[in-house]
Every structure is written in structure tokens, then in C-alpha cells.
Picture (cartoon, rainbow, N blue to C red):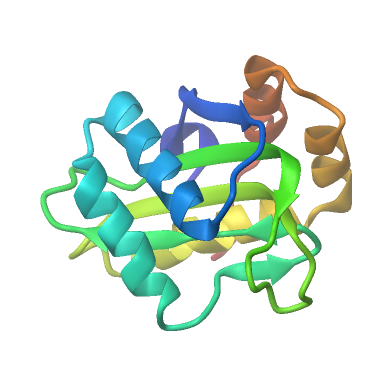
Length: 154
């Protein structure tokens, strides 16, 4: 599995100031609708439902919100770089500036977990995060995320 299979260039954005996690999820829903044809409201509801189980802010300024949705043909991703970090109730209580959201079909089973593991490994790499934080061009961010990121045995 490769990030380039999960993420379209049009699903990589840089956003200015967001006022809340709810607003962030609305942005993710809107981008998902534009890039992948997702139902924005269903996507937002899925993210909020998953978040109610526990925050997806994993620390070090990174959040990995995700949801399983009905009638989705495959796993898709959205990456956002926030110009102003957002309070996200992360495990380390640090605000978030790098967000990689995943949407998977309800019946995706282990593929959803493999995709989440791939994204998590990529976002745990301090070199990748430093490059992402140093760039504001979505095309460059996409290139950083997708250059040779493949799974080993997941």
C-alpha cells in the first residue's frame, strides 16, 4: 500500500485559521466532497462519531481523524497543513498543525488498519514532518507525503 493510492493531489491543502475541531471536520467533509465525491455531511458525522470515542490527536502537532463510511469504493485520504495550530485535545495537549484524515468503507476490515498504520508511520517521521511544516505549496506537500512511502509487513 502506498500513500499515492490513498491521497489525490487535490486533497492536499493549506488552511489558515480554523476556530474549532468541528470547523476542521467541516473543511475535511467539504474537501472530501470535492476530491472524492463524498457526502460532506456523512463524512463530518463519521469523523465526529469516531472522535467521540477518543481524540485522534496523536501528539507532536499531528492529528489522524478517520471514519468508516457506507458506499465508499475505497480508502481515501485528505492532508491539511494548518497555518495556525488548532487545539485538538491531543494526547500531549499540544495544538495540531498537521492533519491526515482517512475515510474507509464500512467493510474495509484490515485494509483500513493497514492504511492507518501507513499514515501513522509516515507522520511519525520527524524529517517528513519538518519538511511538511516548512512548505506551503500543496503540490510540494503532496510530493513529500508520497515519495517512496510504502508499507513493509503491516
